[in-house]
Length: 90
Image (cartoon, rainbow, N blue to C red; front, top):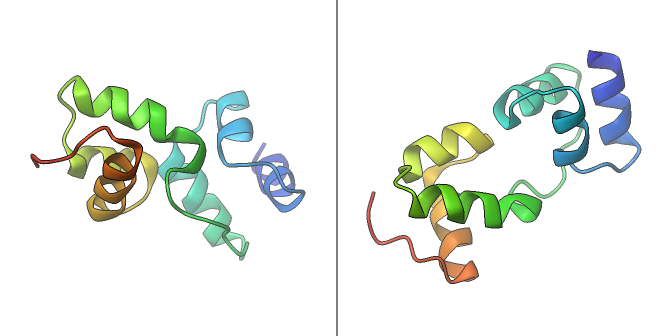
């Protein structure tokens, strides 16, 4: 499974596609890629902004969102603000 995740990403798949197929969290997927020496592409929320915005509106904190998506809370905040989802609270 791990080799398939790594290969899919190297072949251009976003992190979303293979991690949903194998039911792997964003943070775990990024950790796997780093452990296998894979150069990471854009590490914002990219494909997951709408999901993050929905979770944020339902009460999830920026810190928790950052953990879930494997990025910093500040990156989450910037993406949510750019998306128009707000992000005024922690």
